[in-house]
Image (tube, rainbow over all chains, first blue to last red; front, side, top):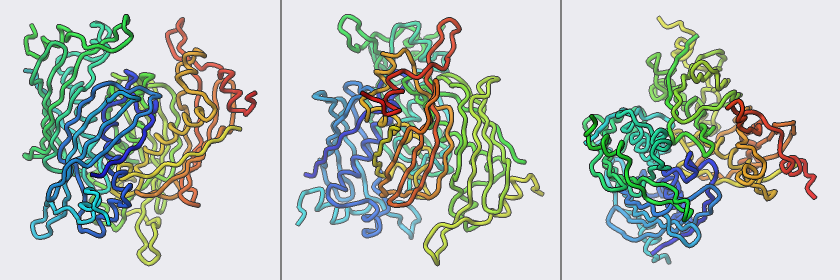
Length: 140
Length: 140
Length: 140
Length: 140
């Protein structure tokens, strides 16, 4: 299935007084990596939203392990892959390498949502065909 | 074992273009909540570091479920508890309530670390007595 | 004119590897302080937007001086005041005290905006009466 | 004098509920741009600190104008230049272009600092020769 790699330099401003990456930054990077994964297939969330009637792909679960610290000046490689497709959800794996060292391993699940106007609440929505094709590598 | 509650107002700036809390903010709040838990027992990480020879309590694992969105203007209650004590690590549970709705449930594990000068690398370190006493509620 | 004070504890996660507040956090706090100033008069931006046809109050200028560092564990007092009213803009002053020391002094200007549907672009909009009354202290 | 350009894609997560860049992000980008300017001359703050006895280059002033909004999906060009050299301080100008539109114009001043051990407080410190050479373009 679809995979994408990107590099992120660890900046001074990403780090805490211990001199290592302040943990919440990883979740910002995971989010940017999901958008980069979509973009690698020519898809933007913005276009998906206007074309497919979905209003978002919020995260419903993270299971992340932080195996080694990363420091100011390091350059990280983030490898993001689709690892599961469901009716209205999809599973992602992020692996972050610092040189040859696997420093973070994270499983993420997102769901497609849309507002149910009748009930005035958010509901899960089937994955748009475009996403299924992109994620499964079945693009024409 | 030790538990602490705090409220967090959801600000405009915490939210993304969907109008809901931008996910990485939850991990900032979890971090602040761990420090608040320590502070509720009169402990600061700063003092722990200078007294106990540890140099940090980095997160090694998060398992978090996002059950409902929170929106700009909501007021969240974050309930943070110690749920497990190990030789050099401790387990935390964060539950975030939006009114009566459980919106986020997160299990976190942190480890005490210190630099091993001989080997020039970070190593796990036994929990300082002060932390064990505080977390287990066995304070005199 | 209207003024408001709030305290902000400097958290571990607000600080950079130098151990002082990472500068962009001040601008997050300024933003939260403007919303707190509105809230002190019973006004929310959300309500303003739905009632007054404005779609935001973006910042158009900051002039800020950082006079002294603030450190992890400090408690800051942020004093936010309206210091100027114009047709579609308003001027704010933020002063941050760390104990008795003035650490940051910032002048901010915001403008009320609305989308001009005819021209499809954002335009300045006269301040809603509610804001003028609130800011000038002329509330009934 | 020294100048550097870099591009920054505006991500979903950089934007607020109005759909435009949440203002504090600009100050994160300014900070990263200063480090990139140093790096363009082969200098890192980390090395400067260990070689020159300075302990930081904190911001003492920003004067920034936000001339037009930037939106999710835009690609910004940040042009960062040294525009003034003083004994212990230096002036920077950041100009952010969104396509051909100048969207942000910011003047920044930073100072070199070191801890005065005798007095136990932070003091301004003369700019290291390496910085003066780099900034003035007088590198051999």
